[in-house]
Image (cartoon, rainbow over all chains, first blue to last red):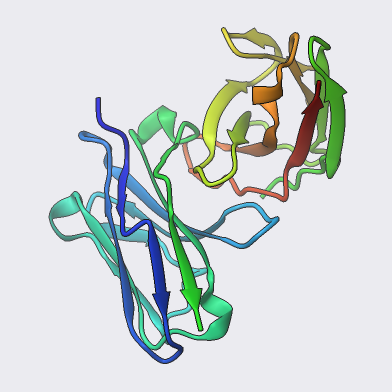
Length: 115
Length: 110
């Protein structure tokens, strides 16, 4: 069974440029998460989807970050414009939901460097 | 949300048993305890989950005392490949409100 797929794996951009990350969750997983992870810290939740609905986006900086999950499968996270402080690893995860929320399956992440 | 406290780092040697303790004094009745493992350049990986007493799987054991205010992840006979960061999370699996902390960085030495 394929795991969570993310692309690109690495991205280097100049500040003020836009950037987008793509995630394909495990087939059948209704719940999708986007996390941000800074060096030496644990993942921080940005947004959580139940199917196509964003049910927890309280930590998403909405002035520059946006996300979508059309048709409740793939998801895209966008930053526009990027700032130096956005350099981090962006992780996508999925879970079955219900009583399996605690078991999240993570992708390898996208390492973003903003110059 | 239940707050968790773990040691920042731990060292061990190959073949030893490692116990990592997590404190969660304000755990709620519906909260479960979940542990994840993260290797460098990879996303976290689910290890084990429990509610009370003891849970064991092929990777680890999880010990939870009766008051549930702490839990201990036990890794038997660690190897170099167990060097990773281990996260303890507490939350209601029905509400999906778990949050990652800073984790415990385990270093296994030869």
